[in-house]
Amino acid sequence: MTCRDCQLAAHREHSYEFVDKVIDQTKMDIYDMYKFLTHHQMVLDQAQELISERKSKILMRKQSLIKEINIFSAALIEIINKRSQNLISRLEQMTSNKVQLFDTNSQALRKHLLPFNHTIQFVKNVLHSSSDPSIMFTKDHILSHMKRIHYQKSTIPNVVRNLQLKFTSGDITNLMKELQSFGLISLNDEDSEGTAIENAATNLGKALRMALTKQFSINNSSGTQSPGQAQSQPQRQTAAQQPQQQHHQQLLQQIPQEKGPPVPPAVQTQQSVPVTTV
Image 1 (cartoon, helix red, strand yellow):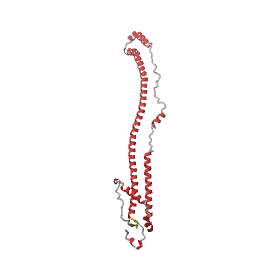
Image 2 (cartoon, rainbow, N blue to C red; image 1 turned 90 degrees about the horizontal axis):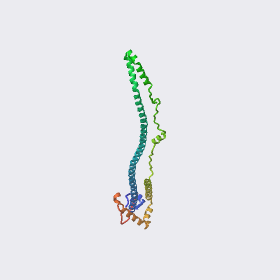
Image 3 (cartoon, rainbow, N blue to C red; image 1 turned 180 degrees about the vertical axis):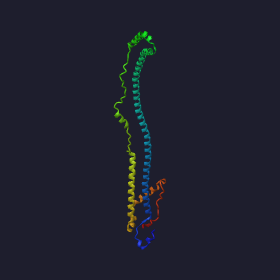
Image 4 (cartoon, one colour; image 1 turned 90 degrees about the vertical axis):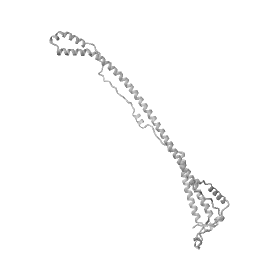
């Protein structure tokens, strides 16, 4: 089976190969690429599953860390509130004692001021509204009563001293700095499983490139064979190569159909027909 141009005298020196060998070689090349693509698909599926799993784990871990932070913050707030309540209770106790003492002194002073107020009001009325004869007749009684009240013993509390009531927070500068920067969130991206899948994908890409380069080099070298080499090559095929091709054809038939388009079985011809490569 030759092309029209090969029948001409100027094109009879073209190299040729047998059709069954070309088909077998093509199927072998396609099957090799199919294995690479299948493995590549498996690696990508595993990477996709790993990404989904890591996403779920990091979201769950995020919620867990939020709870831990809230619990820690609540514990700090509880400690501060408890200390604040203790300080307020202490302040109430201290001020209540002083206020009670002041109330007692004030009540005693009011009781002591009653005769003073009454006498002063009486004397004021006498001076403003009484007649001169009545004042002259009652002056001894009025003066004696005023002297008795004046010399009456009275206790005056010491209220001149100023009370100093203040709040001292103490040296909490370092504590406030620590509270402003407490806690630490870290994220470790190192993952042995994810790294293994990534390395597998990288190695697979390198293997694909090497296979493509090798295949192109084989095709180029086979396309430049001389007519004598093309004719002698089928004769040099050994008995060990034929079982290898048969085994490869069996592997082609075992490819699962759902993974890709069906691969046709190897063509069994009664006679090797040469095909000329233009």
